[in-house]
Length: 201
View 1 (cartoon, rainbow, N blue to C red):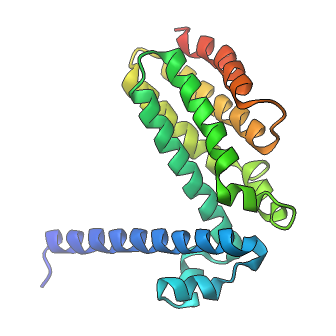
View 2: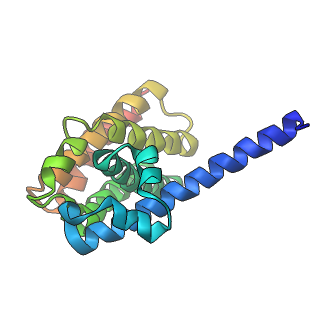
């Protein structure tokens, strides 16, 4: 008979196994998108690459749009984690935010997957995930950056952190989707807008 500890260990192992499987599926899908574009992606090809059935992918992501959402959130999580590292290693608030803003803009500009999914044959699926249906993305990135800022500067006001991080992520996201000026200019404008908001207690 299983003990509570054994049952908990089993559940933890199953969760870790599922997370690894998701990562493998997303990695395979990323390569398929880079190679053939979003419209060229076939769920069966992704399944074959990972060594699982298509039904397993459908069970995890529901359908191709569900896979698109997961890809967007995976890219957002990677960006958020990098920004968190920048912030926690920065000497001061202004330089930390400037570098994280700049890095986000540069990452999007140079990301192969982002370039592919924003082409005309893919944007009808992906553009809403960055705009009208972008709440999960904004929430994820803003929460991780706010947590990093709170660890680095515990004196900052929590409510201003919440509001400022959400607003700054949406500001940067708008410039990622529609880049109208150099990255450095956008990063400086973000610093001018948001550093005073975070500093006021």
